[in-house]
Image 1 (tube, rainbow, N blue to C red):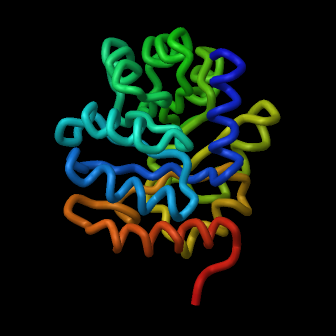
Image 2: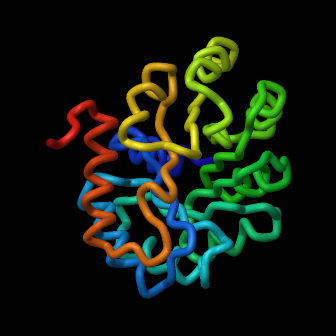
Amino acid sequence: MKQDEDTVFDRAVTALPLVAILRGITPAEALPVGQALVDAGFRLIEVPLNSPEPLRSISALAHAFPQAVVGAGTVLRRADVGSVQAAGGQLVVAPNFDAGVVQEARELGMACLPGVATPTEAFAALDAGATGLKLFPAEAIPPAAVKALRAVLPPGTLLLPVGGVTPDNTAAWRAAGADGLGIGSALYKPGRPAHEVAVLARAFADAWRGTMRA
């Protein structure tokens, strides 16, 4: 990845290292929900490719919110990476590790967060050029395991648990060594109106910062 693109992703992570996973969102919902997220401080937005017309949503979000890094989730095939970039996406996320997906993303100057659940997968993903690691499914991996994994990973490795994350367990993940979190249905699920997403987004942002709203 080029230095300027690294900086864009790094800036987004520094601002708020929470990835909003908008699985099932439609293009008509994308901008109102995106506005709610950006207003709450989110700078990382993922539209899984098994959503309705995902590339249209990615394009709309990327153009409307240049301060955010927008990309695709559930990217399972190397051939899909270029389509995401062409739509304006800067980020590729997957539930699994596929070396071809990681390599294509890096060749196109995109950040890539493959899914891993074991040290073997984690080191293979890093060797392939992953920007960071999506620890998935986090429901099956207690925070204590994150602490153990952090002890053997190279210093500075970006580690984001995904799955079952709530404002109430955010502190436990952070204390265990998570650098950020991916948040799915606890933040957005199909049909949830933007004003409800706004409330939940603020709750997650505050939980990460350690200042839960009353």
